Amino acid sequence: MNIKTTLKSSVAVAALFAVAAPVANAADDTLKSGNKNSLSITGQVVSAIWNADDGTSSGIFITDGRITRSRVRWIAQGSLNANVTAGATIEINIPVANNPGAVTLGTKTADGTDLSAITTWGTRHHYVWVSHKKFGKLTLGNTGQGTEGSGEANLSGTTLGGSLMAGGNFGSAIVFNETSGAQPSQTSMTIGTVMSNYDAGTRREVLRYDTPKLYGAQIRTALVNGGSWDVGLFYGAKFGGFKIDARAGYYDQAGTSATTNYSASGSISVLHDSGLNATFNKSTLNYVSDFGAGATKQATIEDPTNTYWSVGYQAKLFGVGGTNFEVGFSNTEDRVNTLNFDNTDATAWHLTAVQKFDAIGANVTLNYSNYALDADNAGAAYTFDDIDVFALQTIFAF
Image 1 (cartoon, rainbow, N blue to C red):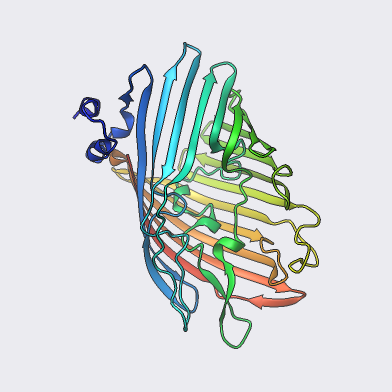
Image 2: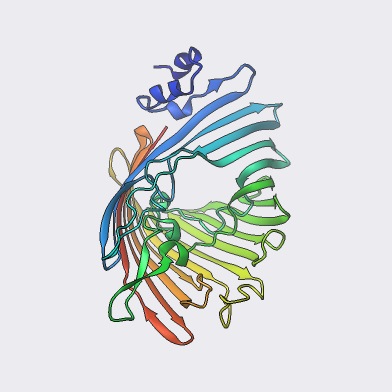
C-alpha cells in the first residue's frame, strides 16, 4: 500500500490514523502540500497498567504514560536553496481518560483517586525554524530551551521507561506515610514533591540558536520569554568501541523567578559495542537568599540537588528488536523547603527492561521502582514507609 497515494484523496486528518497502524513504515512517508514543502504526521499511543503500594494500602491503575504520553505532531519542512532549509512543528498531547500523575491511594478512612481524566489538549511544541549548513539553526516559538536534556544523557535505551526522571514516574502523586508515631499517617509529601532530576531547562517560549556541530560538539543557547536565558553544551562521539554522550547546561532564571537564581545540570553516558553502558547525572537548583521568608521559612534554606547513576545492557535476545536492561539509582536532597519535614533525603531504585518491536515502531517496558524518604525538623528525625511501584507500559508509534 502506498500511503501517499491513499492520502491524496483525503482532506481529513483522521484518514491518516486509519491507514497508519497497518503500515509498518507509515512514519517515513510524507504528505505534500500545495507548495514544495513536505508535511509528516507522526505520534504515539501510550497505555500502562501499574500497581502501587505505600505500606498501608495498594491499588492497580490503568492509565496513559507518565514519562511520555500519547500525542500527535505535524512536521513541515522545505528547502530555500542548497544551504538553507526551514520548517515548523506542532506537537500536542491528546486528552486522556486517566492521568497517571493524579491518581492516588486511599487510607483506612478515605478512598483514593483511581480515575482522573485530562480533558484538554496540551501544547508541547509550536515553533518555526531556519537552518544554514555553515551558520547553524535559529528557532522561534514554544520548544526546548538550549539546556533541555542537559541533565538527561542516557544511552541505555530505557529512558522512556521512567528510571531517569524518578519524580515524574508512575506513582508520582502517591503520598508517603509517616511512621514515627504509633500509627502510620499520611503526609503532604508525594514522590513528585520530594524528587526531581532538575534538568536545567524545559519547553518554553524561546528564541534559540544552535551552532553547527564541530567534532561532535554543539552549543545551544536561548532567550526565554520574560527575560531569562540559558546555554547548553552537547557532545557526542565514538572512540573505538565506545559511544559517548556528554552534556552540561546553565539556566539563569533571575529574570523570571522570584525564588531561584539558576539551575545547572550535567550528565554523561557511555555505551560499549558489547551493549554494556553506564550513566551519571548531577544537577542543582540555586535559591535566592531570602527565599521562604515568613511563616514557612526554615532555619536554613539549602539548595536542592539530584544525583543519578545507572548501569545497563543492550541485548538482542529476539529477532523482533533489541532488549534493553537497566539498574538505576536516584537521590534528591532538600527539595522540600518548609518548616515541616526539612532536610529531606529521597532515594529511588529502579529495575527496567524494554523490549522493542522495530517493524511496528512499538515497545513494551517493565519497571519496578522503590522510593524511600528520610527527613528531620529542628533536629527531630522522621521515618516513612517505602513506596513500591510495578509498571507495564506499551508504546505504539506511527
